[in-house]
Length: 389
Ligand SMILES: NC(=O)c1ccc[n+]([C@@H]2O[C@H](COP(=O)([O-])OP(=O)(O)OC[C@H]3O[C@@H](n4cnc5c(N)ncnc54)[C@H](O)[C@@H]3O)[C@@H](O)[C@H]2O)c1
Image (tube, rainbow, N blue to C red):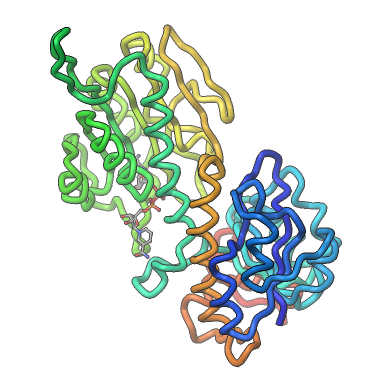
């Protein structure tokens, strides 16, 4: 079977789905790799690096889709809402497609992908079980986003992050607040600590308190009832508006005292909760910065504009999206390793073997034979759980 890697087409996207180092592992599975010429250049991987590891170059995107039995992408149609649709006519019935497909984003788009007949696997649907950790692309990308958000904050605030004792006196360390301590938030805490900042963090899941503390962060305790905060998959559950209102009131003081706030609070399939209001931004010292990693999902800050930097009263609110793409070498390496581990599970005796009794295969499989077949996604879109054929 042939695994194909087209160049990413989302504007500004710099990652690539497979990197040269994973090719020998794919060959061991009996897979051949073809790559659209130049697909890895933006991430720092030359065509010749791929060729040396045994990949074959093809000149166009259409060649990749025409020849590959398994197409691997970072942003497939679905998550690529700008240029992704152009791929649909290239899909072939029964061809396998693996990548970010934003399965809970739009029923119309997922139905369109299904109607093409492509067999698609959405990496976002990877179950949160120990066996799947090494295939979890969301965690890989979140790790990079958390790290990069801190670098952006450190490069934007008019202060130093570490404490310094100098001949010109002592510099006090910057105060960083991280709201949402999932994978991205925890990496942000670790990175800000490495830079010497004093870090506080808050999450509505009380389970993360120890993780925050083990990274040297202070857990911000809010007197809020959060018994039902987490679902079986480890994701936060949506709360009602009165909860968020209370949360904002309680967070106001600690936000006002922070030099940098990094927000990462999201709930799967929902708009991100607004946790920092315009009033709270106004109460921060001029020069402070908010990096809103939830910008793509509506933002955790009321004034956030996705892909823009907004200044309010001297406070800069940065609505970065797709930060993982700004560290493309390692983002691609991590993603390629995640995909390779997934392919090791999926491919048996050199063929794709869709074993529905395997939780990882069943839960990531999104479309097959013209239908949306994923139970979680069908429930989310209120479709009958049984597929029609
Ligand atoms: N294979 C696995 O076992 C596996 C894989 C990935 C993640 N996880 C675990 O799942 C958990 C969440 O991971 P994630 O980073 O993907 O989550 P996420 O990206 O869905 O959310 C980010 C964080 O925002 C928090 N949040 C949501 N609403 C909030 C609010 N109103 N106020 C404050 N915080 C809010 C969430 O609790 C979460 O910690 C983590 O504990 C992680 O370790 C497990």
